[in-house]
Image (cartoon, rainbow, N blue to C red):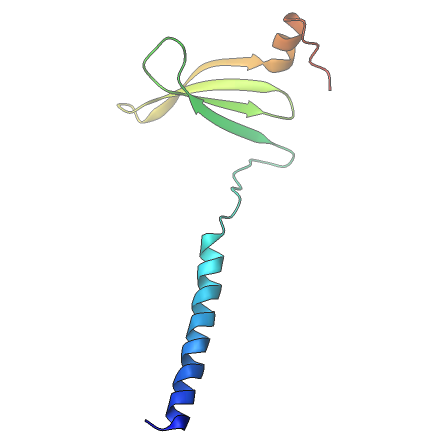
Length: 101
């Protein structure tokens, strides 16, 4: 193998390594979730288990208004069932927490 072929192979391998690094970097960095509905809406979701009961609950909070909704999922019906909707600001004010910003 002469020096010219070897140098071409080194350059090609370096280019392949650089391309692989760029592609790997783009796929390894997670993109933020964008699942907001409408303009001005800001939601967060948390899953958890209630103190009583055997099913997990998904809690959805609308951050702009302070409303919290709780849902369970029925695998048999393949749908979410709403348990309750509460106003966190009202609950904090009743508990003496104020609820102001």
